Image (cartoon, rainbow, N blue to C red; front, side, top):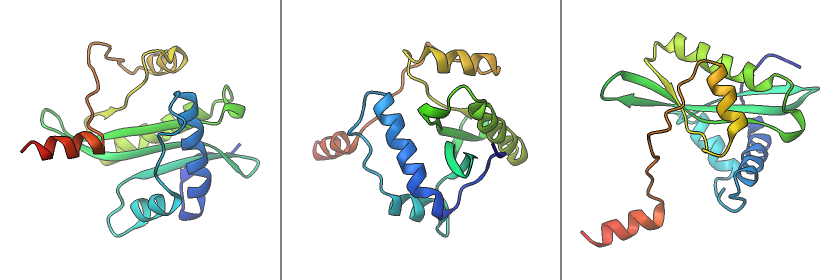
Length: 158
């Protein structure tokens, strides 16, 4: 097992496989519409929209952490951890800890005031993992989203 490293363009096909594996685990198997080409464009263009760390076992990427910058009106610059994924086959080997360590070190280096992410309320193993790492799982907040259809419907009413 290697230490986590920054992902490269060539890693994006495997990154997408892990994203799809997570979608299946989260009971949303058809929700992923992003493509490898989009990941390459968005992560490695002139102004990258995200940073991705990967960790390998025997030359195969078995875990990823994808983050992007945000801004808090209360705190200033923060980072959002979009996904922390470890393949089903490699769970329990410490990869999640290695990736979270890398994200926290990166955030500290960038001087962010907070690192935040979402976790499904039924994913008790993940919640326990995050709480053991010192994270505050804020169960009194709800996530609010508008998908493309909701955006279009909203704008049609203006």
